[in-house]
Amino acid sequence: MADSATLPKDTPAYDGPPDYRVVGKHGVYPETTHDEIARFNFLAQMNRHLSTKVMPGVAEAFEARVEPGFKKEAGRDFENRHEVRKALTREPIWQWWSALRRATMETRQQAGRWTTIRQADSLNETARALTEGDERLQLDPKLSLPRGVTAIDHHCMPGSYHSELVPGDVTGPANYDAGIFATTGGMLGRYNDGGGVAVAEWAKRTLGPDFKPKRILDIGAGLGHNVLPIAEAFPDAEVVAVDVGAPMLRYGLARAKSMGIENVTFVQGDVTDLSQFEDESFDWVQSTMFLHETSYKTMPAIFKETRRLVKPGGIVLHVEQPQYDENMPLFEQAMRDWDAFYNNEPFWTKMHEIDLDQWMKDAGFSDNELIHDGVAAIVDKDVFPDAAEDDSEDYGRKAAWHVIGARKVA
Amino acid sequence: MSTLDPLLLAGTKAKGKRPWFLDNPDVERVMNITLALAQEVAVMRERMDTIERLIERDGTVSRDAIEAFEPTKAEAAERGLWTQEYLARIFRILQQDREALESPDEESSEDVAEEFAKT
Image (tube, rainbow over all chains, first blue to last red; front, side):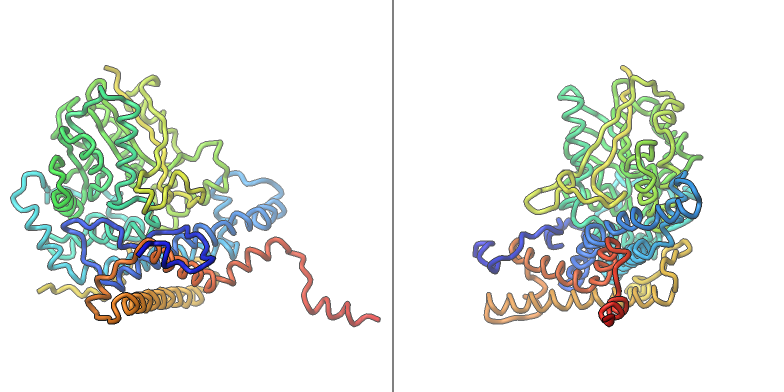
């Protein structure tokens, strides 16, 4: 049956998330029932509805009521994004958008946790069978977890990156993996790898065929979905993925192997101290959407470690949402701060206000070494929404990012 | 066998004090319950749509066939469009709040009634 044959006459063109069933299933992917899939479909649509139909009303209300009201009351303009945010919290349209956005995130967590925890035994057994005795999983049970991870469960994900419900647990990362589709409306592509694909293509395009990394380090790797495309793009490279969360790494190796990606080693470690690796031992040090989950105390140490570890001629790349500079309107800054205050991303707000160039220079990089660019998720456009062509804005959640980095002078 | 209780654990609270947004937290509680119900209605609708399509295609339906069903791109688009319509219906009141921003000084029926009563 031709696809178009089933469409009734005058059906409007569909612009929205694909069906969840297009998500790629690897060997450690949780089994999903029809109704569990339908739940993820609803949640993806709900997030899309919120970002395209409800959230624009916040900007309209800001212009019509919130800003004029503040000016009248205070007798002056807003001075910073916190004043804007606090004024917004009294606006009913902001309140309803926020209440629904938070509720949708919590509902998404419940949906994914139900699916993964009900099959904890089989998921954990699959991961065990794929990783046990494999030297590419290096866990450190003595590692003390940084407060940046333990203080609050990031993006309302109960247990965050590190908790285990039972020994050998992988239900946390399986939930993360299975549910990103709902949060991004499918914008990260089949294996939630659209960001990594974009970064790998950026490296090939920008650095040319002479850039042949032998060793690549991914810091704050989580379950490895961002680094696997890089490992695939540079199959001769030895890739090391470091994270503090044992469940993520366990699931990450099992997932990578089941996808036929064999050149990644998953190491449990605190990225402020990577002394197990020698100076100048990596051609590429990468982080993707990680810096906002650190702290002012740890970031300088992380930047110094990246400088120490990267070889001359090698690159350090951090993929993040844009910084709040003076060119970004205070309203946009306040909206981008939403996830910091209302979606358990506490460092997001502070991280995005600093001068990253200066912090990189403080870590030893020079001006002429710095790299600034942007990337948007690269996905199979026949199936998944294309972030680069999407003109909607989801303040901090869109699959389009800034790149800040450095190429160490050879 | 696992000793985990998936129903209890699925709905567990994330660490960190929960922010509330509406002026009355009880209204927000009801909103959360309503959203969860809206989700379940969407789930039932998708299941019904699957059953209908299976009957049309195969003349019969089984639970295994429901689980194995894969919509074509066009079928997925139809289902996606239905969900978009459904959400637009559910959140009509929020759409109207947005539209009302454009006319803050709109007349009420009460005002107009007085005007029409003038001779």
